[in-house]
Length: 259
Length: 248
Image 1 (cartoon, helix red, strand yellow):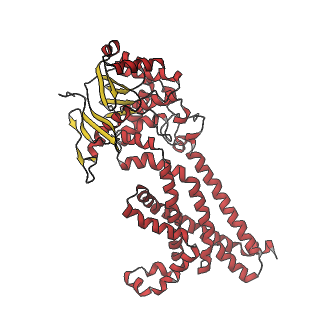
Image 2 (spheres, chains in turn orange, cyan):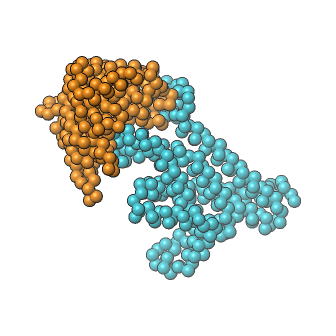
Image 3 (cartoon, rainbow over the protein chains, first blue to last red):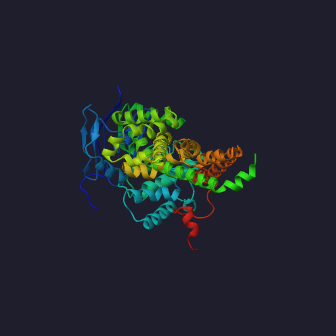
């Protein structure tokens, strides 16, 4: 499929909770095969940004465009943003994967069922085909032998890899990662990052909120540093890590490395 | 007192009573479940206009004795006979058994609404969010994520409700229904031998015990996903029962 615009276009997102302004005009453009790392201290709005992109939170202002389809937003009588067409949001989410910090696997379903359910329930895929594909995807993330396991029988790293396979099963145009390794024991971080490296190498378009500086530097081609709901600094990752321009980003790097 | 004499003489009465008690339970519980689910969802999703009458309904049927409800329906309906005949509902209130079924169903709906609502509220928010994030609409979300969880959470309380109804259906005997309690009263009236009530107690205990055993099996099967050990056999999406029947 050819498209004229970027895979994902995020324009001027504002979001506040009550009087607290969390996002203050953030824009972002992801071309196909881009891996964009989003860094920032806690409370800088990184996770809220991701949740606004797939509209788990409705942005107060701004627009999301996935492969040339802009999601229409209206204001309700109280002045809050609402999707003009819920179906359109659902259609967008089908092609915009999300990987959560807490994995959020469906605990009553096996690893295989977790991966196969999306295509079956949402895309109307054939049962046999989606199961075969789920097996292939679990093999790809190194879990071929864990198809029949329930989430509580898997380690955190394994659960997160199932969650990545679950996102991949929808054949998304891009995948959002919300601090995918932050809830993991340190020795399990590597296996998840390795899967994400493989995805990046295979050309998957990814937006990754992370605290893993090494991953951001080596895998992402662009990095954004958020501060107080705004983009404080952004650019090609290699350049940003080699020559941070702003003091704040430099401080952030130093402090995060020291941890 | 002739413990075994009563049983050997009147066992067909007891048996037919057991049948009626089981029939009342087997009708009221599932019919109640069918109505309780949508009401629980409406109550849970909190539209104030819609959930207010449901709250009123629930508090009435949970806050008054089942015997009172039964009398209200059975004797009360007589006062409205002309009206009921006019609207074509008299058949429902004419028969004591139908009155009892109606009363117990209305009663169990109220309890089941609260039980299911508790289950709905217990579903992990993250799993619902994962469903939304993958593009599920409300129907798919309820079907694949919320309801399977909610009913697993609600199973113990639902089992309890089945037992409570099975026992409280005994009050149907006061409006001439020959359920287990009704048959027992009839046997007692003919023998003046209180061992009739002894056998009634034994039979109620047997019914509830058997039910509890079966229900535990269902609970165990449905919480498989919480056991630390992965299933040894089939790594498959098909339900276990189906897999066992498949040729190897």
